[in-house]
Length: 303
Image (tube, rainbow, N blue to C red; front, top):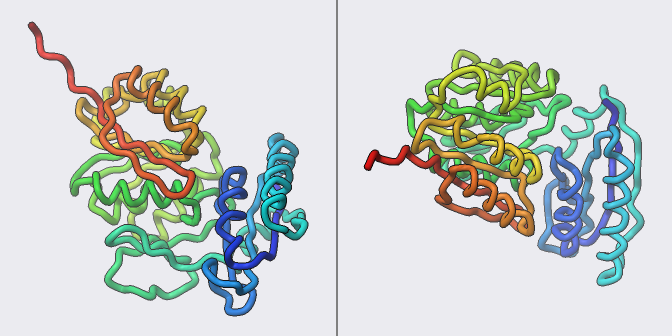
């Protein structure tokens, strides 16, 4: 797969607004880097480079048009430079991300760490990643919401399902936090391969079983035994899965963490989850992004 790089250089005060807009359409996340110091400086007037990558697939034209329209509307409030678009081939995508990718502290104990950099905080549990050519670098708010929720709801010894595993970042975090077994599924064979590579890089391959598959495959395979399921995908997909029987993928009383949801989509996703046998436990927000923490309803006692 090839990619389309979008880059704008704006003042620090505009960087967050531009990054939020790009994040709606760039599932691989958005990078913010100071032009002067090589690090994010979104709270100052320092020029900041905001960069994102769109997959060059059948969704590209629609994504690009939505980005351009959103930037035009934002530019009506405060002047913006024209975005620069540049094709990036598969071979160069990961190298392009390395320019921007920095350690990210998440929650109380986790640290997303580029595999080529030393940890700035050895007391945190490292998640070593080389983005490769799969999504899931940890820069996106929905990924960060998922990681923080896993830290809060996973108990040592739990079994977890990572549905739509991408780079394997959520599975690796679960293994670091003491999960006994993680089943990582993705419909993209490349994501499965990179999840396995990243699991090996982190020394947790024995805890993570990565394979190609979907919710349908999961429900057909076996009776539910997982204590926790995480799905960081897209809101319409989450709605469909909730109606398909997502609640049945975990044991009664099991926890389901759902992310990739914009604030205006949260209500419809929640409604589908409630109709599908899930109870609301928690709701977390980061900017315009929402993560829902749900619980599978226990079986009703006989009258």
